[in-house]
Image (cartoon, helix red, strand yellow):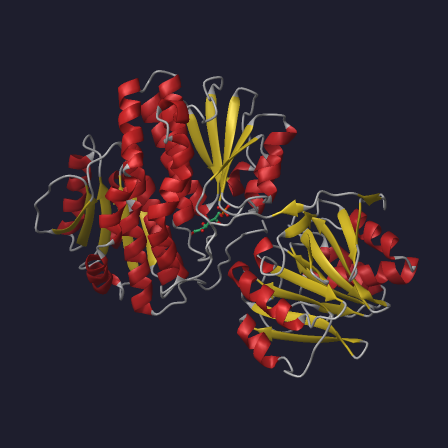
Length: 600
Ligand code: F6R
């Protein structure tokens, strides 16, 4: 959720490097920001509430430094103000921290009894005090860090400066990501590759319970037994990854438009040579059941796959929210494949659920976007979505890439278990090859979406309804709208509305609906009539030729269910985008949200 960057150099001024790094990480957390750097042989700390620009304008423009650590925060313990912002300095120790110290209350009480005083309400200041306590006690940094690791529960990526050793940065990690990059004349640490890519693509990944001492010309990495270890130097190579906003007003709009490339890029390895390519997908026929786990939008992609597995390949499949799954009785066995879906590959609940399945030695498959992220190392098999970097907090192109991979996984399974014939498989592969012809007209109907946005943007409650797959699309559509426009929007199974929620429908309440299933459409249309009878204004996405003046209709082309899963969401994404734009919200960085949810 938060972002860490730190740098040390013999002769470079690292302050602009830290600020640029923080700006590149700001999509992960932006409640407050702070920096600690060496100035006249002392540590100087500046912290602000709000965004990184507030921090850079507060810095003394004359200052330069060769060692520093910086942080952008998404508040967990205590509100988002400059006191709670990181870095936190306690006596000799200055730290920035990502993660949550779960036993911070007990530790704080113990430290208070030892006369430590606290200024903030954060768990991070407690971590700084504990490190200071051990450092004072052992006078040895290795012992300090390993003792800290033994006694702290929870997750942390910590970057630390020590008053007595200001020619080094120390880092330690458990469950929150941390990398150490080597650049010309500089070593640079970060919680995310994006912070350092401008300076280097060479980096070490720290694993849980490892720590490191980083100086201008050396990186020494240790395990929890204080032994020096050799780690692989990774090289990040993703030349196609374009992270610029181009001429678009927001990253979100650019990323929605990117989908004409990202969907095909994701599909290509599994379609370009017809049946041979579809067989590049892992063989699922040996499993008795498929479970799917994810959070938010990734969970919604899982819901789509559940319908496809069950309805089209007669395969048992369930979907779980990772935050629930990890505390439930999951009836795991070795015949059940669990698929983990994640854009970031760093979501704390999804990682915890994945670890749980691994502990039971049951098979796992990841559908992940960010290369080298934590989950990619934990899953048995990883299928990469090729969405490229997704900067906007609201997920769009990662979702369609997830749905694309899942649809092709289902298709390959259906072909293998003979529930989908060879000719049908070839027909669907052909549809995937032509996906751009189907998507582009939907991406181009800007005026249409703006018109709908104009008629709903002042509302405070909006409902999304659908049946079957259309219910899954409704959930994603409603999430997109609420997270960026702050309009309360809820998705309901169309048939469920009259079991309570219909009491909220009044004159002009907007109801957005998708009806794209020939078997269920007439029932969904009846549900629409019910809300229209109560005054609702209705917007319908459909692949049927309805002519009904009581609806405003967006037509999508008639395709197989596999492609439909990609098409329906595009109008929903663009309606959400233009609605939020009319409300003037911070679309790429909605309040209270973070791109990568690395705390439970
Ligand atoms: C919504 C959104 C979130 C994420 C969720 C999981 O637009 O982006 O709901 O989908 O936090 O994140 P990942 O996919 O990184 O595990």
